[in-house]
Length: 163
Ligand SMILES: [Zn+2]
Image (cartoon, rainbow, N blue to C red; front, side, top):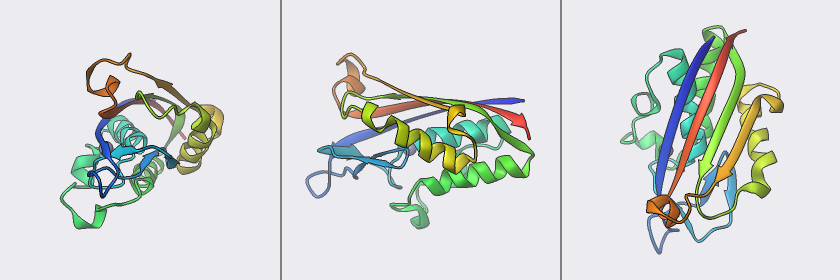
């Protein structure tokens, strides 16, 4: 088996045109919120952290190497394509998801209501049952950039098993 860790952080700004923020999307689910992530792609921090966790487990570099944030092809891209690319590398090398554990840290919006949908999106992209995916939300206790609502942060840990 292989284990991988992924981490991502995006600065949050008022949604364009007021600021540089994109709509607030996590694990493919859009939350109605006045600020959103600044990023080259759609800024989905869950999909980015999960992509990096899988690539890390495979020893296959990282999302920035494979999908450069200067490449116009990824401007505003739906980040599910990154997860799909990592999942296809995983399958090609004979691995499948053992389990995935994701921690989202942000002050607002509250993500609890979207948890089941986000887990379903991840399981669908990774081709595994939903009970192999866990996702939880935490706040940052109102301190530092994340706690002040200026950033969203995600950690992901994945275990891959030989399929
Ligand atoms: Zn990112």
